[in-house]
Length: 393
Image: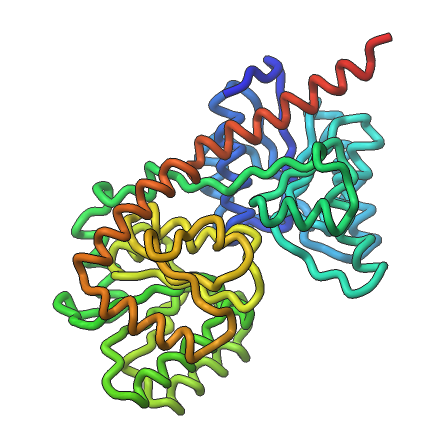
């Protein structure tokens, strides 16, 4: 890890700490700063992951950071200015666009370095939306969460390549360690999901919040095609919170019933024990309709030794090696996904196991949380050094 100033205090600003890759990365980096002897503050609305932040030594600063109301955003900026001055914050790191405005204004007002992480490839169908997205590029440096995202930032905003650093998200190798998942944890999850211990079908986990672009409906359609051709011999587990999207969940339930898939597709809801979830599965699947900027749900199962079926676009082209650690499938094509599921099933347990072990070795090498945190702290050190050089006569 790089040497940071002895009194280093990091302020990260993120909308919520409910669930998701950006939120997990926020907690990971906070823990790394604390481990280096620094202080880690997170300004956020809060959420179910807040307890994990505080258990790791970080400090939660609650404010309506999720808002897009301009007046509340101005109020947040004033709160952040006060926080920066009281806590002697060394650097501000924004992780989403709306709170980035407040964080950028506060950083400028206090002359504190500012960086932002581009966690997604944001749509921009108008100049106004492009201006809104560009707030993430107005700091000292931009962090992109994959090479795919980095290329998009440079192309979309026309900024110098040396100002954009690609740092893939990291997976906690201690948490995602097969040997650490007890039989009791597996049995608890199996019971909660209503799975038989001797379930003979190919068990496929699709992890991700229930939202249309994550592809749950597409996979139900693929399962319907398999069923129409005979017994699908596949059990699809949809793992994720609807986060209030009751209408979409209702659509999925209706689609499952209409296709007669009640025994073949289960919506199991939010899961706090994803290592056990992936270990229960034979295969993980990431069918996102839009390109993933990184796609943690295609990487975490590989760390657990499970091959992955992923949509052939976005960062999945970096994280999945076709024929070696998984398969890439035409995005949005239900027939292609049905064929891919059948290919994975017919590969057999021994071939899937070999692919899973290759996936595990590669993912552990490239996508560890330690490597991600070290690279992020290196960015902080680089920004602070540049500020020192700027002040020299």
